[in-house]
Image 1 (cartoon, rainbow, N blue to C red):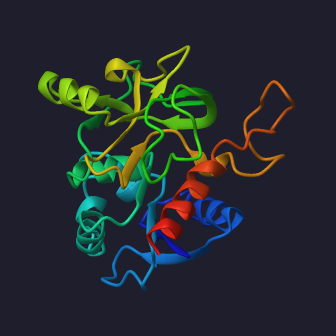
Image 2 (cartoon, helix red, strand yellow; image 1 turned 30 degrees about the horizontal axis):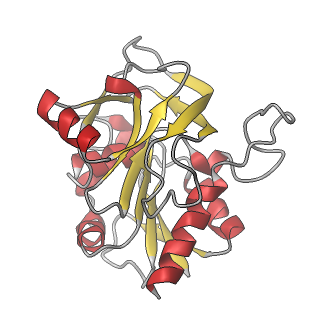
Length: 232
């Protein structure tokens, strides 16, 4: 299976995302924001970074890049799509997932190893988790505060579209501690923390077992691979 990772001007974590795809057993495919060709990939990752310097709004300009027309069509057809941090912001700006993002409540950039609670283990990217499970995934953002109007919050909470929730501490003031959401179909998932930084022992977050031993992020990519194999 081939999973494409799109590079935008200002992407920082595209190489890490491709590494996560490879460690999961799929073939990573580098895609360019200015193209209109998904090169026949089976799934897509929109990586983290600061696309276009986060001018206008984080992810707003990138969400209108040429390749996003193909991303929107692919997502609407059921292709698994994952947006990480800046990629989550792009998905929200493109209206592929609900909500929006504003400046962190404390007005500062934050970097920490973040505990998350899995709220929805049935999306294309979360089937290798258990509902209610706590995982550790690195977090780094300045515009990570998830917001939405009360009606949208009520709807996504009621329909199971909240996929991850911050646990023990809310690092950016997101409403209802929301760290990640999905579309109604469950094939498109966006989250602020960075699973691609928790895929290989020695390079992940600290855990109770050992320093830098966290690999919870790898299960995002293996989940997608299983979802694709089930569709094949």
